[in-house]
Image (cartoon, rainbow, N blue to C red; front, side, top):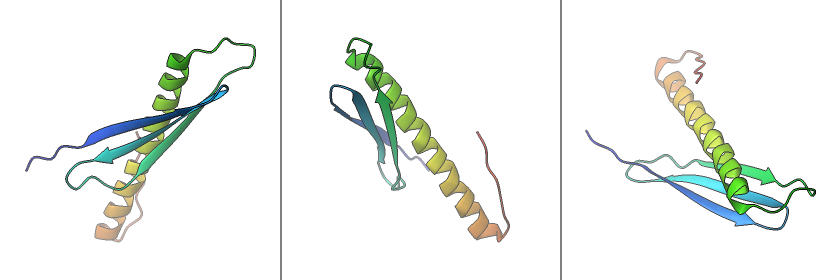
Length: 87
């Protein structure tokens, strides 16, 4: 079996924050989305690259945690036993 998922990162920015949504697409990709936000210190000069990198990292981390929770729920459904998965 071969499967392929694509991670899509979408950004929204204003003068003080950048938000990112990380979502998966592809055959049988689970319907989960990660959200990440970066806020700029008012004393710092604007740099959209830094905000995007930080917001993307946080969104991908959030997405990863949701995938782990989804996998743990699947294991519990099959085994009828409590499980705890970690990174």
